[in-house]
Structure formats: C-alpha cells, structure tokens
Length: 188
Image (cartoon, rainbow, N blue to C red; front, side, top):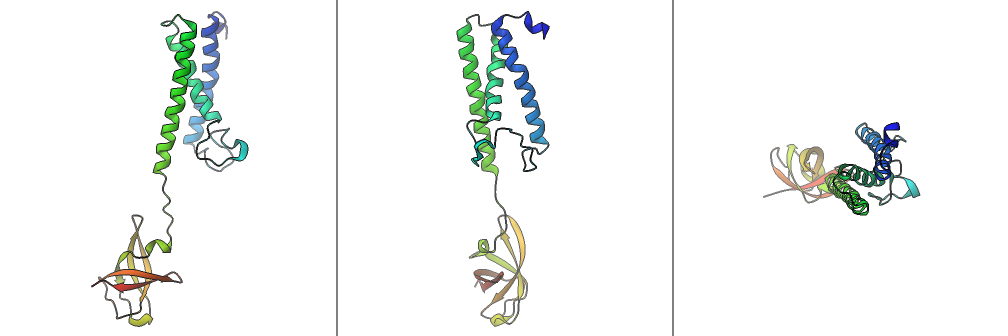
C-alpha cells in the first residue's frame, strides 16, 4: 500500500477502486465456472437475489457494479498519463464503465437466447409424423411402437391405431394421445 501512497490523488483513487473490484471479478468468474451460479446456496453474483426478484437480468446487482467499476477504474489508470485533464479523464472512464455494463448486458441477453427447454412432453408429439418400429395391431387390439423425433431427439413410444394394422417401417401421423399412448393413423 505504500506504493499507492506516493501516487497523485486521482490516480490513487483509480487504483483503490481497481484492486478490490478486480479481486471480486476474479472470485465471481471462478465461482461461475465452478458452478456457483446454481442453486447450491452460493450464487456467483452475491447481489442477484436481492429483493427477491426473479428477473433474468437485474439492473442493480453486484456483478453489474463490478463490471462498471472495472471499466471505470482501469480506463482511468490506463489513460492517466495520456489525458492530463482530470474531469475529461473521469468522464471517459465513466463512459467506458457504462460500455462494460452494456456489453455484459448484451452478452447475457445472447446467452439467454441459447437456453432451450427440451423437456419431453407427450403433447409435443401431436400431429407429428413417426415411423412404426413394432407393428401396430388393428382396432386398438394391442400396442405397437413408433420412433418419433421431438425437439431434435428420437423417442420410442407406444402407439395404437383405430383402423387397420400398420406394418413396421410405415409412416404414421399422431392424431391423439390417450394415457401416454399415441393414437396414430397411417399416411397414404
């Protein structure tokens, strides 16, 4: 800390903001990659649950403050010897801090677009085409099996028909669902 005491007040202030902010950023990053963002009681963003809001992106959180302060402090340190006008340097640092905050916001929005719920639901098979895997007996006298693709994954499901017997390899369309059994019709 003695090295910081010999610095000019504005540069010292930038360093006093940059050091703890950088340490918090490193801890947040490590926790994020270790899975600290999950529900194990140790959130990576210590301010993410403040106020009980379940919003996907909170404007006022520790992570956002850290991102702003990183841009602010390191810009001030980097341009201190280049820009001698203090208010201009603070304004530039403030602008870069806002830019860091905005870039983080954009990254989070893009990452949320990648999230996809691939939970299988029988209702998502309705009106889809499937291939008969095991022959389906006529008039609901027994069950056969079909292979159907839902959300990019193949599922082997039980199927029945109300019409004629459907041979293996035939294409069928799901017309109804009864007790997790697909009711299908042959595609002519």
